[in-house]
Length: 498
Image 1 (cartoon, rainbow, N blue to C red):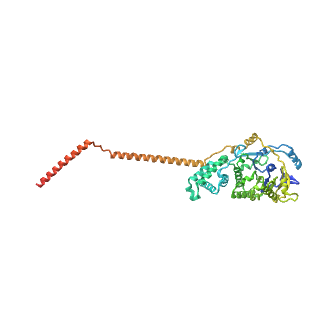
Image 2: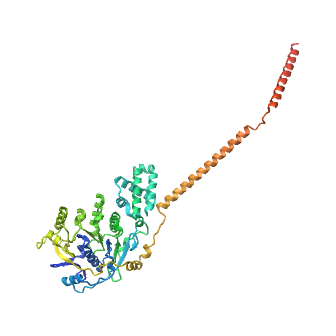
Image 3: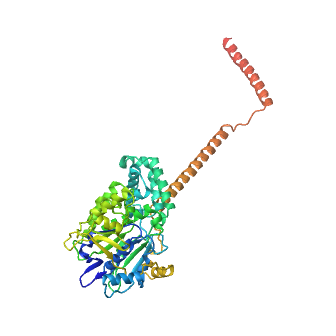
């Protein structure tokens, strides 16, 4: 709960109150704990507090129980006990300004991006490509850029991959080998992604993340809730989407330095999916973004069951930690428990490892940075109750919020402008027409040559044929003529001789 007078977030109460310094919130945070131990309550209290201080929020809603933030909470014995025990004065239930989003466009405004904006690195991870296939995919992007071909949706990418494959010899000297096997593997992976609903995610109008930096009329930050119940059924798509979003925010925001409070707060539930099966280069990229994005005023919170789900290189960038209960039934569980306990500064009042195992629902051990950025000693405390509803709203209420959105006209209708697919199809059609025309002209030329040849043959064989009788008469006449001729010649000679 944000305390305006003190400009702090009152997060929990134990032997003493635990406050989060807004100026230290962009040192990021971790909320960990087993299922059912109270992570969602902690997430809601923090998100509500950020909104109250005028910080826009993004949160991924995997279980569907965060939609209730658009309506005020209601009294129950558990919340009343917390209010009385913690000594919370003037506690008021309230609703929060909410914007619902959904990759599938069912439970919120559609979320889309283009193939070009996603880029070859994240796409390679999404498609499960090996290093060689990823190299070919990078070539595809380079060729598209060189020819000013827009890659917007999956059909654009499929057409571009096929185009590069068909012209592999032409590009080999410039970009390197493009094997038919790699081209085929990429095409198969694209079909699999399409079967998982990926064609819905890629398209236009693409999401402008600046639309998430909004405020209500009373100055509170708008909560952007991404409905992920269906998206979460495809973990790789979910994890890759969150990574894309984080990198886009990093590119979008200017350097801000140290601020009194964040510009934007992100909550990534089931954060281990960002890193599962991710190549080393991608993990290093995430580490770099997490390290640098705080200078742009962004607070990133990872929510997961176990701190070991997060790579050490990323975990080392996290300054604020809330650890709910962990159970240690196996040797590996005990090892993870010990690692979680050792990440806190020791409090001589209790054993952190034992405390983590003994925590009840809504309890946590936690450590936050003080105003100088120094981690406080670990405290055992109860998390404050949220002020919005803990129950999910029904479909009618959710849709009413979606339809009332000022962004509905901008994102609801899908666009399909001319891009690589259309250009390549047009080029292929023109080539096919040119080939057909050349074929027709060749056929016409062949027919012309055939007619001329036939005409020549007829001309050469145009004399009248001689019958057998005519040949006999002609032969007799020729014989008589020769005899008469001989006699005339002889007569002349005889005359000369005489």
